[in-house]
Length: 133
Image (cartoon, rainbow, N blue to C red; front, side, top):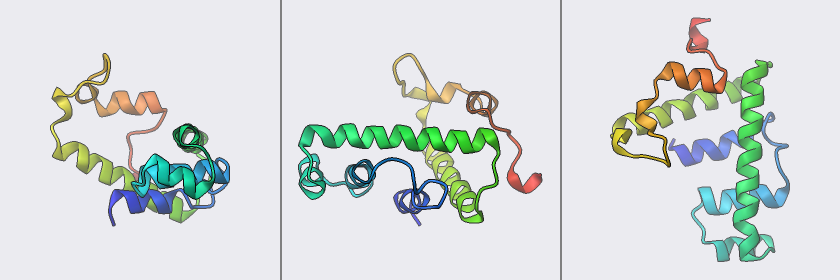
């Protein structure tokens, strides 16, 4: 299963299914996951082109916020959430390892220059795998 399919399924787990409004979720899925144009997405969900990107961005922010909240609180999550989360992170790390991102720069930030320990500290998570616990 590729990362886009994983992300679609991940956004539908019970812990994340209530995040955002119906229009926000539809805009996010249409332009970020399905690859539709802003025009197509706007027509499909009944909003203007300028609103589509805003709705998708808003949903993405809410989704990330909720995922961080679940991670920080270490609340009991469903086995489906844990499995999809682990699979998604593995795919992201594979993509990260496959591409040499050390030369890319985002603003003043160089993603390849940050250690796993620093990432864990920023996210407030542990470096230990769930299987080791």
